[in-house]
Length: 281
Image (cartoon, rainbow, N blue to C red; front, side, top):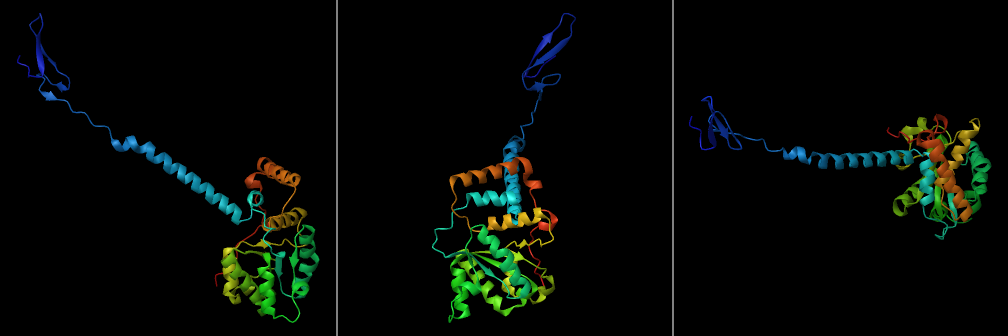
């Protein structure tokens, strides 16, 4: 037997012969070269590509979840954001909030008997038309001065408010300040306004598309719903300086909710939920 140059012929005592092949060769005469598949470089790189993508998607999902929770005024997120916010009581503004409302019986009664006492009880300074507007000054200048010197503007939303020409200037000035100086607007839905959607001013529609509003639960709502409303409103208001003891208490409350309530149970119930108004005509 004549083996190829890649093998050596071996003869056995019984007269048989066999070729011992060199490495990478095979066949009876060692004349067939062996081929090996190269490792797939794409497969080797797969973990280095997939893992970062998965991590990015997880961070993105977590970010979207937190944004949704903040947008929908989930209490625990509002508390955390509020805790890390800067203090706002050293900006030389006169009032914490200007309340924009229609001077109608229901609207005014809510503002004067419910909202105003509660805000002042919480330690906030409030600007109202009848108390702060200067006699002899134009209405437009009074409105501009009130909003410019307030850290927040609360809009008390009712069908009467939406249809009023007088309140239009107030939310238009507030919107201008919101876009120009990051002035914060807090819409409070006192009554359903869907029936006046078609006639709603475009500026107010824009505000309600950009800003999530709080829905007042009403006098017949349960104690928990009412308490949550005031808590959320308070957290949306300017952060004011507190003692170290009160700050520690705030941290403890956040920790307790994280361990006991959790972000799912901490979400608002149906009666106390905040919404974004569908203002499409």
